[in-house]
Image (cartoon, rainbow, N blue to C red; front, side, top):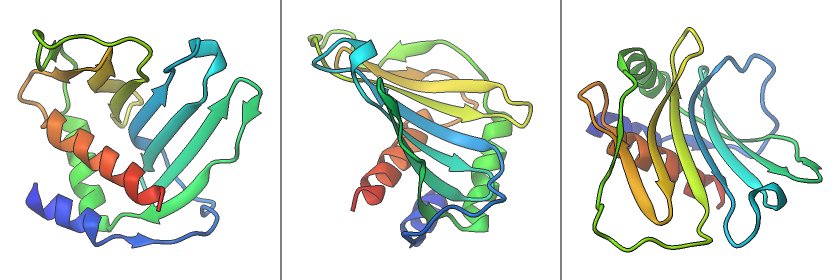
Length: 157
């Protein structure tokens, strides 16, 4: 796992348009809502394609902005992510801190990994200021969510 994290940190950031052969989505982080009705807020999507391209998209109630190419992950990192995707098993999401206070008007975020057959496995959600993680041994949901959050942060540089 440390190799994957270091591989991501070593990725090359490029600010050009995405290449034509992009492949399927492997990882996705989608954030929407917060301080307004969900049908009035923007949705921010960071996703990783099978070929390693990291993309970012903004969808608003009045239209869809073009997806932006942000970076390319190494083949080694992508092989690990694709392997994790195939091993991922859907399951119950469990609140990481059920006793913590809840909040209102905070954005909601979902984190998904996609299998070859297109099935999505939601491995984390963040709602009402609470993190809900997939609780099975098929993947490290905490580590994967950190990868996506790091990619979104790097994409905003």
